[in-house]
Image (cartoon, rainbow, N blue to C red; front, side):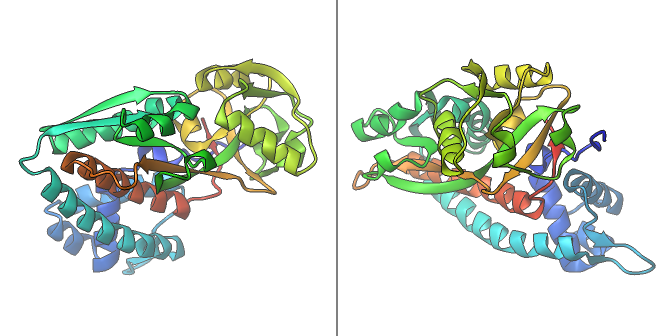
Length: 322
């Protein structure tokens, strides 16, 4: 049975403007009143909400007759965003206070995947808000990030949570779910979810030994009593998804990596039993006095990633094309 065209991941394209438009409309129960509060035309606000609904693949408002009220999915997102926006406003105030009239350099060390896929946009947005602060990014091996923070070569490290960094302060940023990426024509592509045990017998394209993602995949398969059947070992995520698109195997990667590494004809499906997530954290050296610029960037990371996490929870379980 051919796979149905899946919905795109909300993390890739949802904007803060769309979320604010939705929140205002859900609060006012009226497009016209919400548009006034945001200084928009009703048509512009409606377009933002329609775009958000298209990204999430579900209606957020009941528009039957004269009714204009959030659906069950809309109420869930409204509740999540109320908390997120309160924290966001507070964080932005602290960020502005820390960054106002403050220059300085923030040295960030990150693992290669996060340095390539997550941080560039965040750094650009941050420096747009605070042009007096410069952020210097170093992409290091996963095992080197904590060492760079310990030695003082980096002010902040961004990587997956690691027991070897227990001596450092680990500030949670978000949780990234592991997904199966397979060719659109593969039988598993039509499924809403796939058990890890079903993947064990498939030819897998994996990252080379030493990668944190490779270790996570091997540990999960070992946990269920299965072994890894390797079709190809590669260094880069884009190579893995390219091989999948060519029908040379399947791969298991975190959702964020698959959102960025686009490949025609590749479908991503949630993995279950178990559902495996990896925690992405910011590492800071405890007891070290942080420069206001570093504090500002730390606060910005948490505030910027908060809305994305809330949106992802509202759409969790959706299958999409890479």
